[in-house]
Image 1 (cartoon, one colour):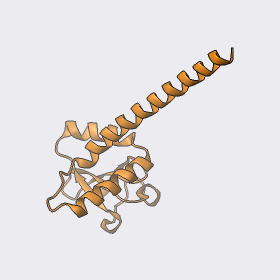
Image 2 (cartoon, rainbow, N blue to C red):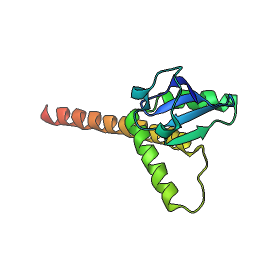
Image 3 (cartoon, helix red, strand yellow):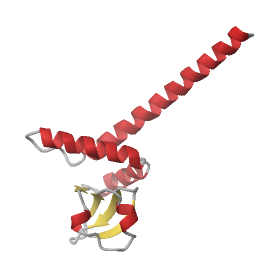
Image 4 (cartoon, helix red, strand yellow):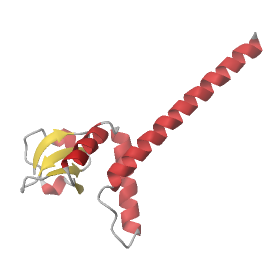
Length: 128
């Protein structure tokens, strides 16, 4: 596999031997490899196959925005669920969970900031 693009600390866009784009996942891959280098399969924990060109671009855009800490948590969650389930998970689960988690965390942060602002405003009114 040849590295085409670094998406984040743990995710690389690679081109397989048969020319298909895939997303390779592994801890700290960004620090061990550069674009254009050959990725050793022993460093890869999971490979995600991308089904079509439109979805590929959407996934890449999404995964570039995933903070490394979120990616690690999602990766661990998928690994735990995979170990517990008898059937296989859909290969797109990482992307789907990433999208959902990012939205949920952004919403949480927005609500938290709104509540903090409301409490501050209320305290200012009380003190006046």
